[in-house]
Length: 406
Image (cartoon, rainbow, N blue to C red; front, side, top):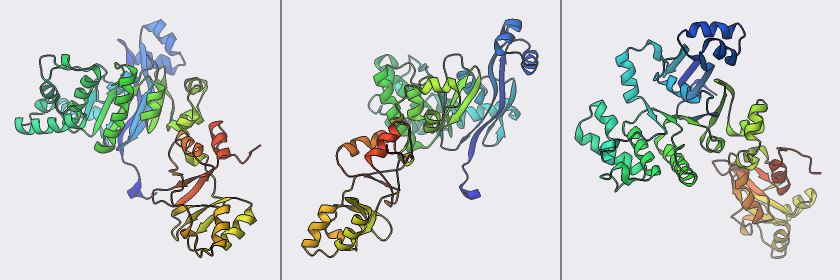
């Protein structure tokens, strides 16, 4: 990867600690001397909330921090924009150390660059939806007409067009959370810090909000740090996930890495009941196509190649390797009888196909609908692999790219 292609680091946390108590340095010294978090609490009354955490978040990434209650995740996200001052360590936004910022510059950063969305909707009950959503722009001092224009655009993005003049007590929980999200989007921040934003919603509304959030983020392209205690939510939303325990990060990885290669017993227990088919990608079970034929070749060439490999189906590609269709041995035999000259005259154009980064579970309905293997194509439509049924079954059992079919 060239320098030009390297991801841009938007947020960088380096060796971050947060200790609650009157003498945090004393507690840190005890930790460094080998005392446990529990022993420090018992002896000094100090709470080690965040312990030596380091990670980077790249521009446009959805980075999920997951952990049980008390793991330190909410403290960590509040340290990122210095709502809580870290005891030790550094936080950089766009390469600028927040600890070096003056109070005024830090406030400008919060108002314009980094915005936070909380679990509790924090709406003003006496303000209408449009006025609630405009609050951040008011704080910025944005002129009224421009403020209204931006707020109406944000409300439409989150599906609240037509509710502008309603009040919070007239809205459902999901709609109230949309107002909070619209308020954040209206100020057009580069970074969104989201502390369990869907945690107060019932399961059905929560799933709907997750789907809407994914669609929205594909449009607005913000850098997101998303806090949750729900593993399924983390796996669904996160491009990378950091799992926290007792103030520390025990593993950072893609959803697939977290499920397939858990770092320790703690993570293993977390992911034990997660169906592999939901997170393991097709590229981990696909195989080289058994046979690729070119669309200009004739059926006699196809018959020879298929007989030699003892297979009954083959993919047809063009000169660029793009998938054109699929053909069976019986179709080849009939084409020979009819004196067909080219395979593209008889190949079925709509071969079953899927992308390499899609989850295994998306292959299952395709595989169930046909005896043909599923073609794996890249963004340009080029054939790069296939998923036979046996590979699909092995992948679901945790045997990716296994050649053992016994």
